[in-house]
Image 1 (cartoon, rainbow, N blue to C red):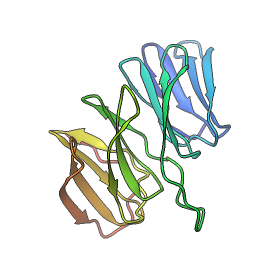
Image 2: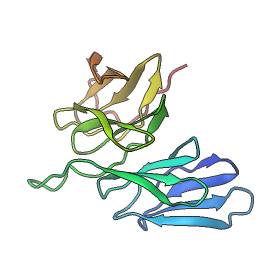
Image 3: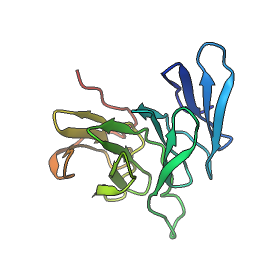
Length: 178
């Protein structure tokens, strides 16, 4: 297992290097369901309103029914047909106000509708990967880029830049707001 587990509703959800997302009984460890993706799953799941949101290195963000593992929808991110290195989702998602926010190695940060997977907006990080998990508060979404050495705050509703700072170091750390 490569992702951090998340516990919700008595189940433990976790992604794996064997290309699967697992739901285990949190008390006994018994397998409740597993869902196969097209590549390894390094991202940690986000669970909201009975749905598990999790990204895979196959370039898709998946929305899975938390109780059964059934696919509700999947969203495809960008592809890299030049150097084959700018793909995959390592960023764990954040869910707020009906929107799922996550970054990708394709150089973009995305906001998609939680109910449908339809893209609301995407932000161009100018090839900077987002592999850290975003934080959402007060109408803004915050995240660093790992190789773009920037820290962004975007308007959560529109993706418009609220501020962007050079962080002077490669940032893999996820922000927290208190």
